[in-house]
Image (cartoon, rainbow, N blue to C red; front, side, top):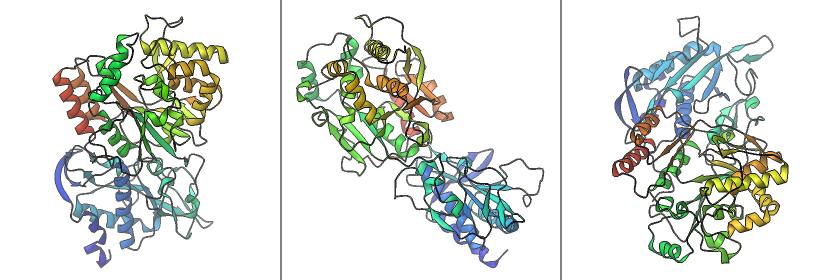
Length: 511
């Protein structure tokens, strides 16, 4: 080992960081506290540490487009295996990292294995989040071939071979993790080989926005406007719980910041309101008032989410591809944009296991069921197909152009819903209608997310939240209101404690 390794320069990555000891994988290991870590930042930090240590011992390496969203991969010449393992072992020993063998191997000698992994424990000040081995950097040992190439020890997403001695190039980080996907210039490029510097067919490079609708039902001016409007046909349409603000939006935005950093812009649709904690001047956020959204101001004020959804395609500057979220929906773990959209632009939608009974809508139907039945009737007349599945309570992938077509195709029903101040038995849900219309016109396919759905009124809510927090294994989850006007204090407290622990890192949207 070279003398320079004794004072290994990559240790600078751990300077000025507080550390504590956490029990992890049956070992006591130090966890380094970062101010506000995200999965993308940890991915980049581990890549940079490994690249720096290899550079310090004179080993050339290149980024490889691996199959993991959160785990960076670098390739090196297998002739440098012993230098690489020695340098990584020394750095891990002195910084509390771990050097392991992630792939099954017949050899018990780390000097003969095809891949090694270096990982550290990263956390944030509250130590609720820990980024460990799933973010570790894999180092692959590529073997020389007779025709002057390097051969990969395992599959990647692009090519098993690169030219030996090829000149290094810098490529966008989005080619190596979908967390950095989309048109962006805020993530530095990575050093790789020319074979990996071009996008493959799985790469999503179009902008994707997010739209939220939000209301504060405790606002006095808003309540006066609602009281002056005509009463709804169904008690659920004016339920206090439907308009209650429990600051779920704050944590939903945190979930986007952590787990979907490829989102370009957030559009928050409100009725002359602002969350008290929201920084409305932050780049990447647009607050859209109802008066800017509705083409006919005579339809305002409205207290009908179905009516508001008929106007979403009118948001100025909204991207063609966007996700529509209610504020009680959360992204539970790191996801790439392909969860929601195909690289060619086709959207996905997520049918639920819930079915709606046959027959037309009637006054006996709850508003969501009535809207779905009306959607079904429109789809039957337009396409001769009968649909019966509702949608999961998960982010809705939508195409702006499809929403505009839905308005033209189903004009009378669309206009009637837009003019309904409260949810009504004659409403349509343009969200559900959009998905089936896009499917039957070749612009959407049925997808799936590993989701969870909970209700505030469930008596075992605290236990369910504890399991969700411990496992963190759901792509998305929703904590919905069951219609109770005042959920028990202990359930509200459990929800807030859960959200604080699950999403402890403030987002840029907060003051």
